[in-house]
Length: 232
Image 1 (cartoon, rainbow, N blue to C red):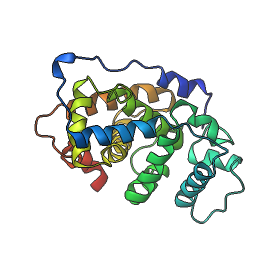
Image 2 (image 1 turned 120 degrees about the horizontal axis):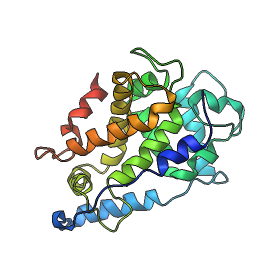
Image 3 (image 1 turned 30 degrees about the vertical axis):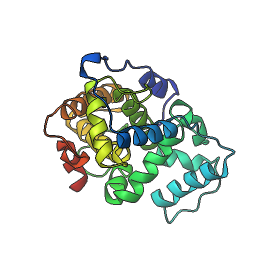
């Protein structure tokens, strides 16, 4: 099921948002503080020699497959979760430790949704499905780009509006990851997509999120229309 590494690199190389200085507004001290903490997380690379990172990866396996003993951090078993090879650490190079944190948050906060997407339950599934774990890394990366989170302060409308959500809930980015994963899977099914169409599905997902983040009545992460997908 899992294909060449160009599959993940091709998605990472997609273009980002257009910037528009006209829509800048001052952030509150709380928003600035939370943005800085989020940016600090974004800049942490995955370190396969770090005990904390190793434990987080093992924890993800334990949540995904609680009845299956993991033979090692380098094992062919990881392919069952949708990593591209026997060593998941190589897939984190495109996004870093935050993508693992996002997957762990998803598994612990919305376990039913996490398990359903991991198991590809529901809908008419393709013979060649998207790899779950690598899809999660791509979603983390896409959100960072879409929200312009590597800039000192976001300059795109979705990113600026996201600052409101972050001000209301420090876990807004992690929750948005979960929302996006659900939305991506829904788009995947609606488009009757297969493996090689993942880029297109992710782009459609991004466009939908950009529209939702541009709505005037979005003040909390729970106000996003796509949030309801987590409640099904």
